[in-house]
Image (cartoon, rainbow, N blue to C red):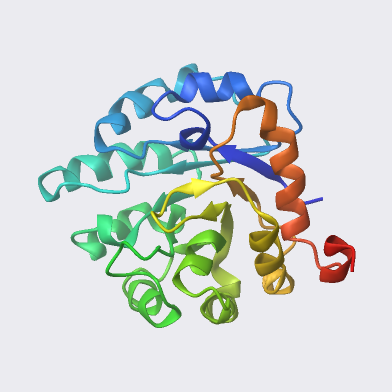
Length: 238
């Protein structure tokens, strides 16, 4: 069965301890520790040794989505401490001011495809430029970003076909027109199913849906439906 979990930043913005408490006792085997804002990076890295993560089979770390150029080298120093744990480190392409420097993270570097807000990283062709510069990097495929960029899911299919061998993690949510992460709708479930057969079944799915604790289990079930290869008609009841 696919490993499924949540990003701490989706459940409790900036409060990773609260998010871990929300996941305690839930049917999740994966977690992404999130430092989405630059000022969250050092506190999270410094407290990693104090966190009880024994219930998770898969752990990843999301680097800040925006990094000031003057902070880039310090960010890399901190992220190298995460890389020492052999966890995938999710990075937005536009956060890397000097991409070649990020080779320091080796195989732990995991580049994410972007939404409409970003000027880079939205297409297979654009992602290729980064993988040419960072040959050891893997891909965090954000299926919600891909759908927002191209609702037909053609670009999503192009990314998956081009980099299937690099996919290390999924991000799953519905991404709205303001680029916010929402719970899945039936429309997004059906759209994601169009490309679900291209996604490796052993790839962990990290949910970025903004939901309440009481909605966690329901959202997990909807995500599993969205990544299923069963008939689309079975979901609609037609």
